[in-house]
Length: 208
Image: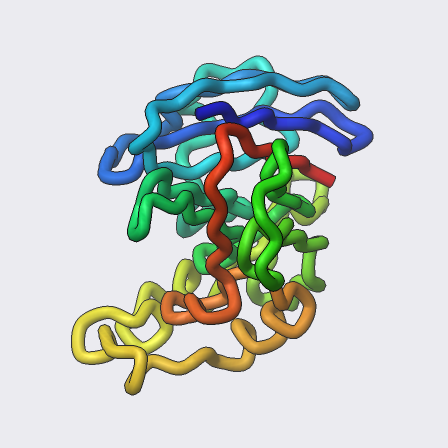
């Protein structure tokens, strides 16, 4: 299966790709995209993983900007190919924070059966409260943390005693993110309104 990653931003971005279950300090695959350019990556039919982009990481070794997380938030395009019912599952996740506008769309159509069947989730960057903002040396906001990535608490991250959809609910920050980006995951148990599925051979992830 193929994923075409396109940069519609006015600046260059550094793209990172990481397979699920791999814990490392940087992406396993990284490349730069100048404005208006795109690159296609090929993955196995059973691949699961995430794709992200960042400003200010171009030309650096993949570990320099790290993987998205606590002090380094990024909007994520998540894929799980050939899952339940032989469907591909995909979503935009802001659970650990966000940085760039993003859209995911199946490239070769696919059957339309409602919003979540071969739909195209999209998210502009929600406004970032000052206490969640990650700022560079020039005072520019480069990313926005989530409550989970900021506090790492069981309550905000739906872990420990809170690892239960009946117990773990979105907080104020998650709710405001969801309002701004109804297609995207805003907290761990946001599956019902955030997971899309399709059966095609190629997808496109667009930034900005």
